[in-house]
Length: 115
Image (cartoon, rainbow, N blue to C red; front, side, top):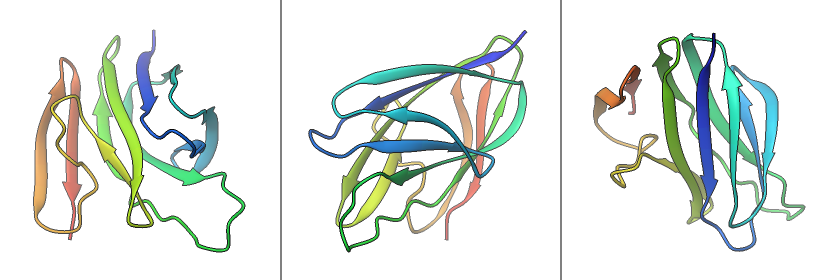
């Protein structure tokens, strides 16, 4: 069986590529959502912008642990030249300070040193 990752792009214009463990996984178009299946286990989840601007958009990866059959929903948006990843409670998971560790959904955990 597999785990599901649901990504919602909240930006009106920006298009992203979902990176799982550093490899391109799927495209996420503006104001749309995708669902992708991944194997259970520990994964690094990140995004890169498909914009062809001269300004690079950066995104710190988050590390998630997904159990078999788990579903994890995340939102992605750009603010101040940084791609930000949020959970369903609007908590930014790839922030710049502090340490975040805990359950995101049934069978989905995050363990992220954020500093």
